Length: 170
Image (cartoon, rainbow, N blue to C red; front, side, top):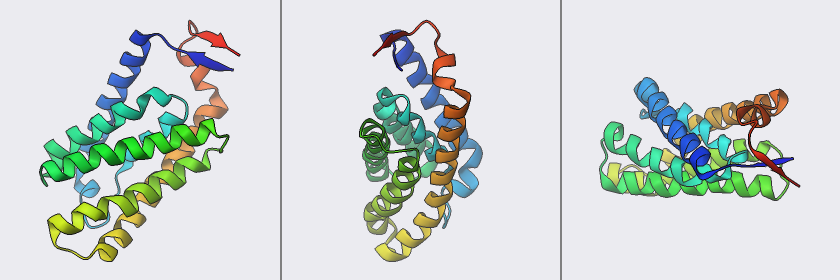
């Protein structure tokens, strides 16, 4: 059974997720921007599996974190926005197409792991393959964490507990 949410509920969930993403990035920035970018915050993209309206908020969250914590300028911020939307959008679309929670691990690992090095190799003057290899390692950890988050939420039936006032649609 799917839930429908009011605009206020969507804005509230979106704002909370942006704030949570930024707080997690702030707390983990010591290793989120290193050689092996273990960006635990990208595990939160998995929430788009249940809440597809979070696609744009996760893009915004990525822009904010890249601008204030990344230090690589507007190219990285714009790239992060696009990557946030592509990754969380792929997760939302994957759920709609009937894919299991594994789509979270695949999307969070491969899209940022292979996409982010496109512009980082230009900015940092490091070969694409070197960056992709190190980013894939970090994103794999985040992808597994995101999939585990979704599995735990499914098991606990969190989406039905979040808003009991949501109207069901069949």
